[in-house]
Image (cartoon, rainbow, N blue to C red; front, side, top):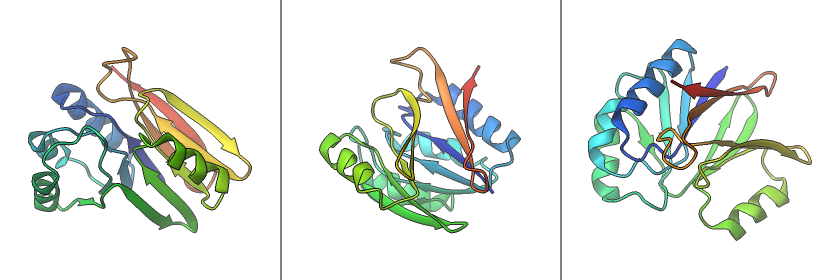
Length: 165
């Protein structure tokens, strides 16, 4: 299975639309969003995804009740500040990552096959023991000047960082 991974969309609607289009082109079956959507008006832009969607909140997300409502309206799921997802036998932990000590402890515990996080707006993929750590970077492109998403092949554990043009 191919999973799409994104984060830090920060209401940048044209880039959200491009990211959704690219995820559909990549034929992902599941999209995981590691937080910082910001406002509820961005959520309908995810409706065009041809995949299931699970997200968590980031530190800049505003009206969480309205975000949950908007996600429910498009058939997507937002879990709160943390999600544990088991897919194709892989145990995946997802959080935004603003609590650095918590993120480090989660990675160092090596209790998950994959830890997905965001917050730094920097793409990064590495292994800590047997745990694969993935930060897809930022869709918004505000800090790095690059809009990025990632895909993960659950069979090979290959991560592909994709720049959105």
